[in-house]
Image (tube, rainbow over all chains, first blue to last red; front, side, top):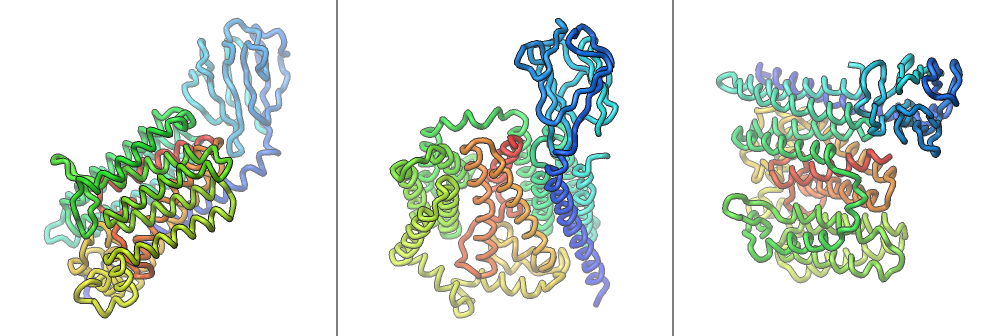
Length: 143
Length: 397
């Protein structure tokens, strides 16, 4: 075996290792994704109301439990109706995805603040996130 | 980076740079161009991963990984065969990826495209028929159209329209009568392919149609009936056309015609046999003996130089790609999008089976490209377009 053959073999071995690493890694990630829906049922998102703002129907310190798609806004058919004039008709929504929860602003006029920044796109919620609409402040607790 | 799927970028980058470094080292002068090419592709792949994972995180995140790995391998092998072609292929990779990203970003809800049935019908018929009248013959099939400034394979675009048409017409399946119109269109399309002697495409169109009809009706009797019609058609064309009889003949007895008709198959088999488990090493084989090594026969080159184990890895990646595609079909919200995803995933999977089966001489050889790996702009565009649509459909789940 000449030196070029040995180097080639080393290279090919390396390619094979990486290719199969990619395959196995994808399989592991896929199996994680598959088992996620079962955990979803136990996984409930809890929102604590820190400030009620102009929303007379909410109570400071109360906790909301979310397990499916929940919409927030001024219109009456929202899951949580906001009375704050600052809020839009359909202001934002929270929905589960792959065992986690996603918050999406519904192109509201005045925007939704997540940890102080205006929400531009769908974002996964994590523990201790602060959601703010007008003077309404919600804090995320994941059980 | 926190996201586990973004972390998949690291092995992809490693693979890209290792392959191009391998090629660069074995050149007489160290080839810095190869590394620049690797860097360009890494930037592109990173951008695609970023877009899909950060902005459209509700969609499938594995597609983009698989569709980055395959072209990288393809371009590395092409670069080793012929650097000029590889540069063109990188351009096609960039264009394809841009089409894919553009589809993901700008395409609105796919359901509203379900109504344009007659547009798809017209597109299908025009593209299928085009090469029959103004086509030119390459490698025995009259399936290329040269418009002076650009030459392309109209049947590749026809495939897209074909899947769209079938999805929009089969979504309202109620009785056998509603299968009449799509059935005629399928037969006309396949008829044109047979006239153009493009047997590979004829085979793929048949399997797309069978899969989509079965997915739409979910009745075994239609499946058996369409297989029956397909078998009858195959038998008829065997009797009618001498070039099909020749294909079957060299498939059954490749060694008897090794110097003439089956030269290509035999050279491919020699090349793969000399590769063995670990291959000759990238750049050490003798692919110059294999005809059409850049497009249809690229799999033989890969087996020869990178070995059987690596090639099995490629097949597994194709399988995973198909699995993810069908998974988005199952999770799609409307029948139209679900059928679209079935059609496109069967299209890609059948192309892989038909050409690799042909190269290994397990089925009669018909010249088509290996999706995402072979050299070919039209094929690259078609596959990226299909994957873009599937990526969009996967967001519905």
